[in-house]
Image (cartoon, rainbow, N blue to C red; front, side, top):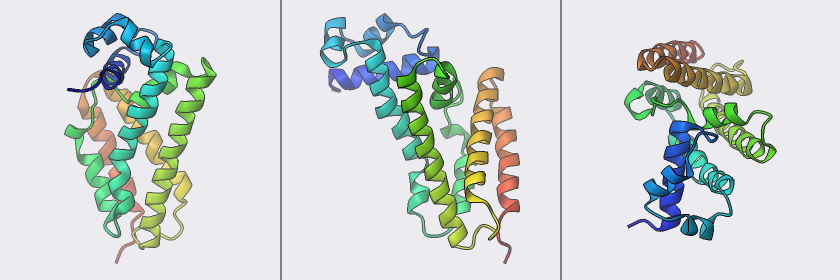
Length: 192
């Protein structure tokens, strides 16, 4: 059985992911975690502190896990990247992107949240830069490819596709967006 803190973090993620921070119900979180308010206060002084911990522990980790296998690859990096983009069943499309949702909700609203979310966004960008640089070094990407701009474009495209999918509640938009993104990535490949 998970400890109380772990259950609180997981329940907070589920509630905030489905409802947003401002609409997230503390009573729903406590019910999902099967614990009392006193237990929550033992670990977290407030809902805000619990959500900040959840962002650090869950959201940052989800991004890292999604893409870290690519950082370890020595070859076939673009093929592996494209495979992740095509793997629609393993993308949680119902509520959009947890990071993107929180970035929108806290834009210019709360400096502590904004700083943490920006740090995670920068880590994601740097992760993509490292992956793409490795692909370029392996002669998978054309020599004149601007890696930083490509990383930003990929992030923007993925975030936009997730937002549209959330708005229109259909994964067809995500699939269509990923198909076009894949076509673009393929246009940057070195042809042998």
